[in-house]
Length: 168
Picture 1 (tube, rainbow, N blue to C red):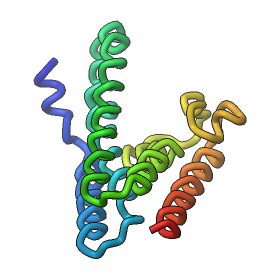
Picture 2 (cartoon, rainbow, N blue to C red):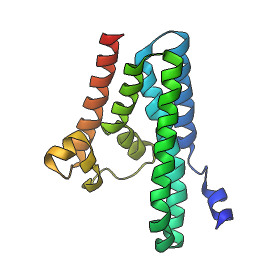
Picture 3 (tube, helix red, strand yellow):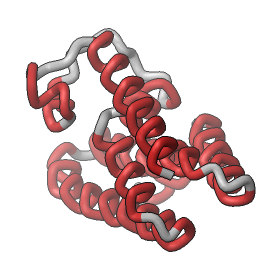
């Protein structure tokens, strides 16, 4: 199974695109002092992590054995959240501004990263998104359709960027 994971780990070029765009956005934000680009870098790097971790590794485990998948999924979620908090701590230490770091988490919470995951992973957007019940709009209406999902991701991310731009 380890060989299967290694062979399929970097199959998609979109993982690399997400990583490079995230690093470029972070460097531009740092060197040109554009703090509203940090949430974009955060979301792109989180997207890269999810494309590798869930999009590849967890899916391979699911195809290999559903029982192993159900046991390993909570551990993946812990590692995923630790990666997110590591990025938040990095942004906070670089900028010295907790509002920007909080904006990064909110950009992720609003569903924008999930939207990028589907776009970069080239997944079908024509489905109901029952798992998005944890997002702000999902808490209000339950399952989201394609257009509600796209609108929520774009609007929430835009509001975060505007908020950071106005506060900084």
